[in-house]
Image (tube, rainbow, N blue to C red; front, side, top):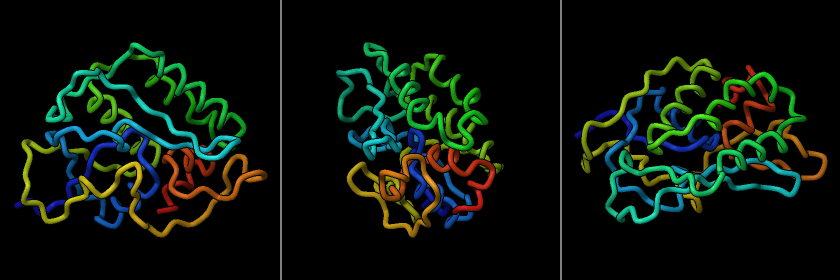
Length: 200
């Protein structure tokens, strides 16, 4: 039985993800061998747009069977999703206080092609940890263990996000939209910059 918390690995995770990591003192392992579930933050993220929430989805190679392990799920490049995601991030956050501060580091994830979704998300989470100055070593599971004491693998689907208490902060488009809680962590980074890590 695993004592350490097991977390799923998300694409540009929501703010609540990091709040839950902090509640576990940042002692966690990333699940690598689960069957890839659809319609989750593993290949989706939500950002702020002038019209409210905007979902970004990474397409995966079709034909992957339902029981495909997450580590084996391949990213599809049939669509130019990297360009679309990067343009969306630029258009939505260009006017935020800290976008330019993080722009160069994040841009590389929309230029280089990764074969596997897990590897792509792992690299982004590594980069996010550095920006948030969390200094947390990222470890992954060696196999799928059903007997887990602190299991967050199914805690955050696209439709259900844990009710984690979140404080409001200034967001782009706050002049036309109410505060949108639990957007992607990049929303917090672009708006709060180095202060983001004090938010959790």
